[in-house]
Image 1 (cartoon, one colour):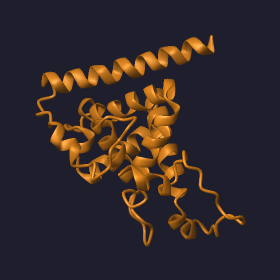
Image 2 (cartoon, helix red, strand yellow):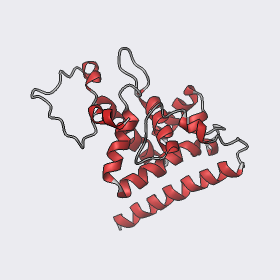
Image 3 (tube, one colour):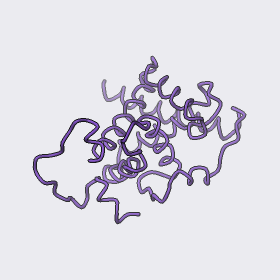
Image 4 (cartoon, helix red, strand yellow):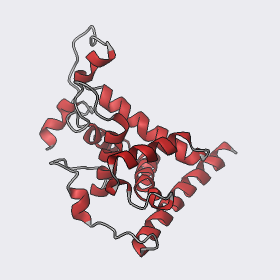
Length: 193
């Protein structure tokens, strides 16, 4: 029975994202859809492998919205949070990748249906924050799952960067880190750009 619930949620997620995308494409919301160059502007030299440029752009903007900029912390772009999530997703494939992709498209298009009047990546920073806040408190279990799933990925990969550890009061591991060539640490991305 539980498996059927998950399958129907996945189906609903895909259908919801496709519906929102279809509405945006058809212009029912009355907002001109930006082209590929809009999304390419968010890449800043990154070459996503698991995600499309659009999905990567949404992930970048969502991560920036979720983390914000606090004090002396590096930015989401400096920690290459989206690139590291993309790298991790390229290693897992399957349902997780499909669900993350569908969630990112939902985040991009759903604000148009929620009264924000624009795609997520076209919204002002304050509007994106308000939209994410709305998702975090919604009664809709699917939207809450999308929010908390993206939040988990963002926080995990952002705070695994050693430049964020002082902010957390963490002094680092007591043993020397070993380089794992297939890992998702920022050092693994150096040869990929």
